[in-house]
Image 1 (cartoon, rainbow, N blue to C red):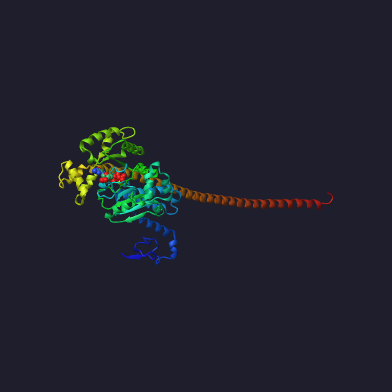
Image 2 (tube, rainbow, N blue to C red):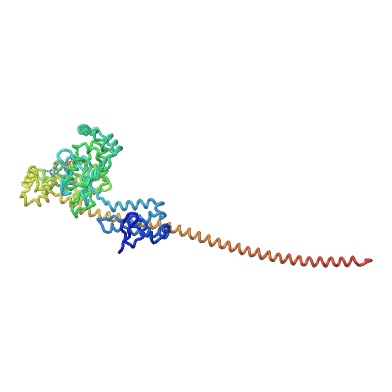
Length: 510
Ligand SMILES: Nc1nc2c(ncn2[C@@H]2O[C@H](COP(=O)(O)OP(=O)(O)OP(=O)(O)O)[C@@H](O)[C@H]2O)c(=O)[nH]1
Ligand SMILES: [Mg+2]
């Protein structure tokens, strides 16, 4: 098959094409006069040919949704051709754009919340399979951080705008004295002008570099974190069975003395598809119940999206027995109007975990002294042998139960729900487009009918006029004839009268 090189962009096109696949330039200038390009037929050819090649952004998570999205991309391209209706129907254009972004970014957001140091980051690291989020013993996660599966590893930093910063600054509560002292100690003001309003930073990096990069932006020990609104982390090593639409959101905590920041977290809880509230199993007290109550208050539309994880399970005096009692208490305490609707939901949604132990088992080959000591203690408590029982110890840590809940109960169900939602939206777009194009077709047909009928009307009128004209002509002729006749008769009569008069005048003695 031959090729035609585009004169404009030098793209090599198949010789069956009339227009460049890349830039749309008319390729057959040799065969046609320059003006041919402007001919309506040629313009239409271009539209059709380019429509056949509307670029498609593949949707990898579902083949059916991929097909829907390819269709909507073509609808969108067709609808936006001048005169096709997009100018007068911005609602349908918006629907198509929302539809495509839903297909392309079908995020299933899982927010991890809780008071300071309850083990949120440790649990996320266990679920992600590697220690990405910092878990130092001092308050650590200072910026909201999202983790998601991605073909390439990246870190994206989003900064506060000036107006957001002003709101944040003015929202410091009376409890923010520690915040202020730290801000001054880290000389926040010196860094402020550099980062406020800064464009997002998108950094592609090696997987091993993520942890250190995150420390720069999210650690409360560096001034930069004050100005970071959000961090997004793309991870390439999450494995094929990790649902790509799942986004883990590590939050800085609900009890932030800067109200604007806790409002951001609350916003995430409201929007999240699932919320995991981390509470320390060693101290299930009023404060923990209050935190859980506030999460339920922000999730009133869907209470079953709330999950409670009692962390630090391994540190309980008698983990098995103590937890059995604690869970019984929690199920009872957290069932009712302000909490779970039913005891059964409470029972499945309240879980325990020892994510710290799980991670130690995972990283057994590279553990430091402290880690190894903690693991040995756990093995001793539960009669395990190291290293042969590492898998059994990981199972005991119960992280896999949480992972299974996320995979099977949430992500899998979410995919079904999302697919239904997308199908519904697709049908809505189709209905809207059919209606809009039908309306357009009807109005064009009416116009045509009107112009056709006015043509007929005109013709009728003309015919009538012509008929009238003929009639006038005829009557004129008739009139002329009558006048002639009258004239003739009058002439004859006048002659008769004149003759008889003349005769009478010429007769003497009468
Ligand atoms: N023994 C034990 N320690 C844990 C567990 N989970 C977390 N930790 C420890 O608790 C400390 C705090 O854990 P993080 O994961 O940083 O807690 P966080 O809620 O993210 O903390 P902030 O982001 O600072 O609010 C760390 O020293 C962890 O090693 C657990 O299940 N068992
Ligand atoms: Mg944390």
